Amino acid sequence: MQIPNFETSIFTTTSQLALQHNAINLGQGFPEFPMPLGLIEEVNKAMIEGHNQYAPASGASSLRIAIAEKIQFLHQQTLNPDHQILITPGGSYALFISLMSLINKGDEVIILEPAFDIYKPLIQLPEGIPIPIELNFPNFDVPWDEVKAKITSKTKAIIINTPHNPSGKLLKESDFEQLIEIVNHHNIKIISDEVYEHICFDGFKHRSILDYPALMSHSIVCFSFGKSFSCTGWKIGYCISSESIIKDLKKLHHNIVFCVDHPKQIALAHYLKEPNNYLQLSATLQVKRDLLRTLLKDSNYTLYPAHGTYFECYGFEKISNLSDTEFSQKLITNHKIATIPLSYFYSKKTDHKIVRICFAKNDDTLVESAQRLKSYV
Ligand SMILES: Cc1ncc(COP(=O)(O)O)c(C=O)c1O
Image 1 (tube, rainbow, N blue to C red):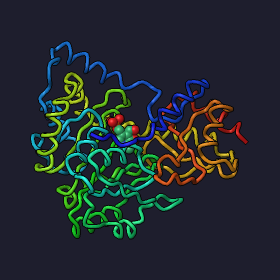
Image 2: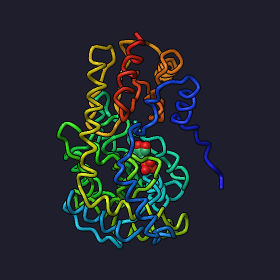
Image 3: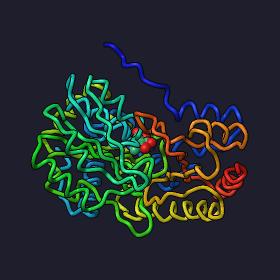
């Protein structure tokens, strides 16, 4: 197999540079605060109870049932836990097998940029062709007319992401209406990356593909427990789709990793039973977002609105004429603070003079980060 010539991830490069310069790392997206102790205790219990051998290939049945109950509670959608849910080693892997199952050589997949960096390589692995479309700037709305114009007989799928990394934007009712119109007219699948489903602010509720029965049979929806329970190192997620699509995904999954960490699945099944365990994350993170925004209110950064995820976009056009890559490098080397240049989320390296920051950090880190960001004047 010819491995495509993938770029080194900007997250790896930035984290290495941050380490080298002893910089605070607001680049890569992971929480600095501890994950819930109750969930750790559930894992210990599951291990002591003996759930230490291979799990069922599609996932522990108790976890699939708990997910189906959660979806019923949140989205009033009835799922068959045996045939519509597959437990995966993380959200990225859920995206990977979704694309592997749908894409053949030469098939086109529409992605909306700025986009999470793995979408393109995952499309290229099965020799698909990414078709990037830039979100409108500065509001990051989807240019639906352009999306429709770019659909060809080769278009197999569109990847959507809500809440959106890196902009923090949430898709709205009218966006889903556009998707319904698209699937009504074209044989296209939607891969919906909803890993930040439980991080929404300002009273906004996460709108999911699962809220729209008309879209369900055309979609694969990907989730991540790492994001929902602040344990990105666990790499456990799941995908939801129609019975026929899940059947295909299972064929791939059973022959790639076969199954996922068993004790953690048992623990998650127990932990999901209490909705507050996943519903409280938004409030915790909104306080952090607001703390950093308040600290930077009187700065020269342009703070773009962000209603979800633990990322925000900060514009520096009033501070420097440098490119976003140069600016973020200077932030690391001279001001000891790491961020991600937004141009890395664009195929054309479009530079809007923005850096992405992750605010899922302890309060003292955020206070120190604000000082360091403001020291660049
Ligand atoms: C938009 C998006 N999708 C998927 C993932 C991957 O999720 P996981 O860590 O569960 O593989 C991430 C992680 O940063 C992400 O930001």
